[in-house]
Amino acid sequence: MFIEIKKLNKSYGEGDNKIKVINNVSLDIEKGTICMIIGASGSGKSTFLNLIGAMDVADSGSIVIDGKDITKLKAAKLTDYRREYLGYIFQFYNLIPDLTVLENIETTQYLGKDNMDIDELIRLLGLEEHKNKFPSQLSGGQQQRCAIGRALVKKPSILLCDEPTGALDSKTSQDILELLEEVNEKFGTTIIMVTHNNDITCMADHIVVFSDGKIVRSSKNKNKRSIKGMRNSAL
Ligand SMILES: Nc1ncnc2c1ncn2[C@@H]1O[C@H](COP(=O)(O)OP(=O)(O)O)[C@@H](O)[C@H]1O
Ligand SMILES: [Mg+2]
Image 1 (cartoon, rainbow, N blue to C red):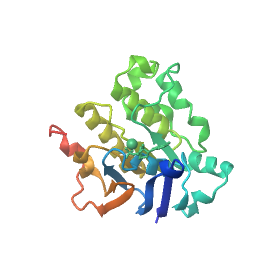
Image 2: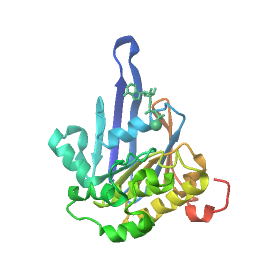
Image 3: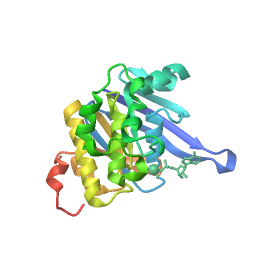
Image 4: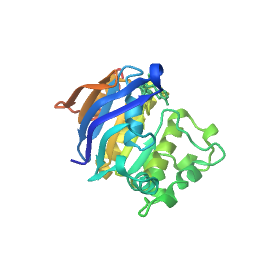
């Protein structure tokens, strides 16, 4: 199994204020699949994603990625893990405002050993005409495309997306999801996506439902459909 999470626990706060946010969670994710995580606000989805992304530290349990337990890695090795395996996409893009589209994408280029050709990437993103613009000159969808480019340039095997369409209208959301689907198909990137939109789980291979820090459902999607087929439907 590519990603094996076992008995993961995470609490915030101390004493009477202590809250258990991830409660004994175990999950396996297959390589090259799209795994969607849904559940109410506050159920622990982002915390779970941040633990996989080594942006937060678990209290106990293991997260084995490609045979390595990242909960046991020291800081320097953890940096190597992030660099080698991960791309991150957030709801509010997190672009650097003073850099152009091209420059934003180039910021992560030096991290990888084997990078994508930037011109080809910009074409895939549909940003040829916008590559010399600054984030403030772009629409939300274009900014998210740029953020996806920044995440992809070093060819990560895992793309972590926390509500990537949470700030976008339905048409633009559809465009972004089609792009992520294309990335999954073209590069075999494993995509783990937190979403509040249950309607888009049709494009997932694996659907995980969180409630109060626990996984209450984890199932393979037998009726997986391309998000492209959803065009013009009420997303
Ligand atoms: N850094 C933090 N410090 C304290 N509490 C936190 C922190 N991050 C998240 N929480 C709490 O953990 C719970 C789960 O949060 P989160 O993982 O963001 O849920 P979701 O993404 O499902 O909305 C919430 O009650 C939230 O307030
Ligand atoms: Mg969240």
